[in-house]
Length: 206
Image 1 (cartoon, rainbow, N blue to C red):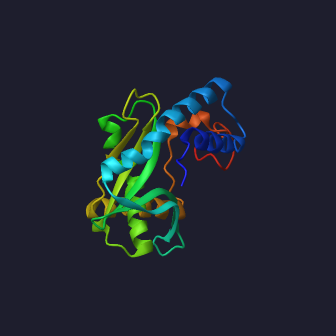
Image 2: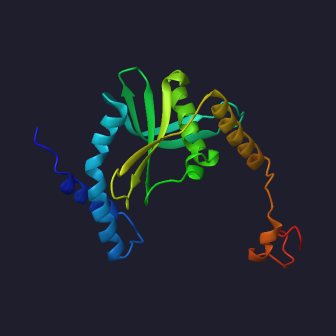
Image 3: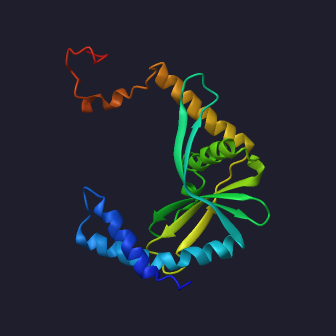
């Protein structure tokens, strides 16, 4: 096999995705992103190898559409997992690519509302493939556009049994309230509502 020309491959993919956009960024931003992408892309596979050792790709862009069994309604969890790899120890690693500037601070890395995304992916990935959750770990893979070095960073997101239960309970509660039309009202934002101050039936304060 011929060696991969990362620059050429990135250029083709970048231009293909750019054509799909209705609202395109300005030329300066396109040039900037294009150059930053070329600096990051050659680091991805070596970084995976360095962090995880020997691995095989289990799936890319894996489509999840799993029933939320905790509800009697016909709700499903829909999502796309960027990458799942399997290492020699038999563990599966769910990775979600995130572009950023220089990286994430400690607050962002530990924000449960951010990490719940991966927790839910893990729960329904295991449900889909009938895999023991103990064999699955979750990571954000940061692609750092403005970093001078170490353009790829893997941030492990804890997703144990209790956190998985809490994440599913949060989704279940939200869907129940939506189904029952128990909408939370932020009356401090009423002045932004098109029905504010009107006699409309849509305004509970009218």
